[in-house]
Image (cartoon, rainbow, N blue to C red; front, top):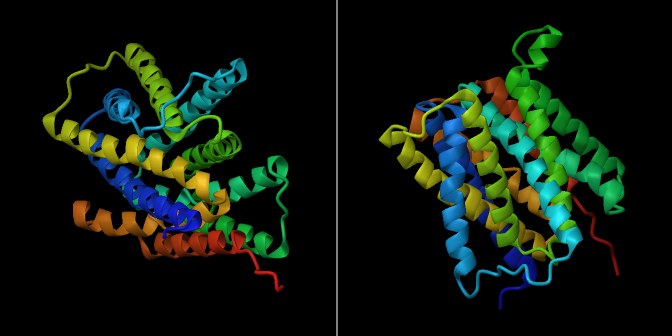
Length: 295
């Protein structure tokens, strides 16, 4: 029989694989269209996929017993998602290789731990401190462009700093309320808020709704594995394992993006960025390590 813990790890691995495809398909689409156009079509399809899943008898969609507080939480999480997700895709758009933001995404697990200490009463051990230092070191290495301070503050790094901070907040909120608010409701809520934001964004920029067929195909595939499958698997993993355990698995996303970027775009990040990515993964593993107690 499959234990709940193994089921949680399986969901986390599926979220990792699907999440790596998000970087690849979104980068391919953003080469042909603007960010507002991307957001509109990406999350329009995401709503379709999530709605179809919600209509399924085993989809888990239920809001019948929601309280006013539950709706307030969804509204707040929607705003958090707008900031985090817009920053993420903006970083993917401006970077040459999607592997770089995928490695920087590991900063999220540092912030998850820090927020976990504040809101989930988790403890910060010396081992976690060493892991945190490794993640920060790896992030600086990835962002390095020149010996000056500006070299550590690239636009991609700054955008990913914003994205990971708010994604960490999202994860903690989801972990706290995952029993009351199902994964499919959280995924739908995220897509609705982001679609509305994209519509406002397009109104301001005056972008057209028509996009090239190649971009539409990339969005069609990416929105299925991204806002739909990745979100469902991420939230489902939190039902069975701790957020820290899921974080260890998902920290390897950059490795899958690395392989995918080579296949799709024929490019690799520099050895400095690859080294930095490996350091962040090691840091996440240390931060999430839990020593077994003897009976």
